Length: 210
Ligand SMILES: [Zn+2]
Image (cartoon, rainbow, N blue to C red; front, side, top):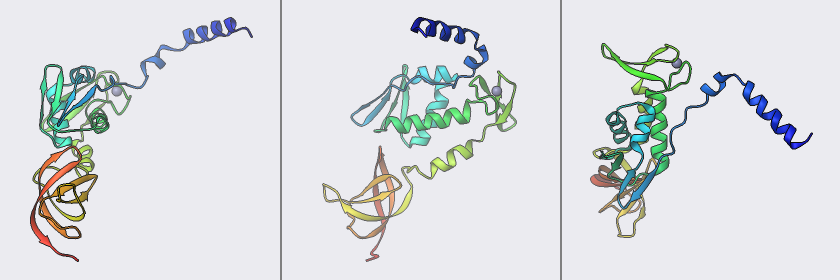
């Protein structure tokens, strides 16, 4: 078959495809435009994302701040986080947000709105009419277990000594720097500061397990 014939056939096949297939394409967000500037992270097309999701920028911002455990705010069309946060963690949180607050679980479309009934948040789909309650706790509980927050207290084994002589231990996927700790000891600490995947802790109780 000549190439021209093949192309003609392909084009004709495309024309006869039912339109509904196109309408049910997977919902895609604009690619996140994120830049790390020193100790801050700038999410440059934040408002493009909230426009596409049709959600209040403040609602998404508060969700991200809570989930990422960082302060931050909206500046113009950008969101600025006061910590170094990887693009992949932001991507992941936005997927959780989209699944929780935007996508209709019946038809998979994002044409939904949030309505409050009594004290329950309901996701109402404008495309198929389905309604479901928004189960916030479920989505954030598993995440909460993997996120450290300032003020958390944890027991941690000091397994290394950092460049500046401070003890360093691992907790979840964070490196936790604990000034005044000794390698090999388990310390009970309170998290005082978090920057990306590095956390800082203050000893509240030191136990020498070894
Ligand atoms: Zn629907």
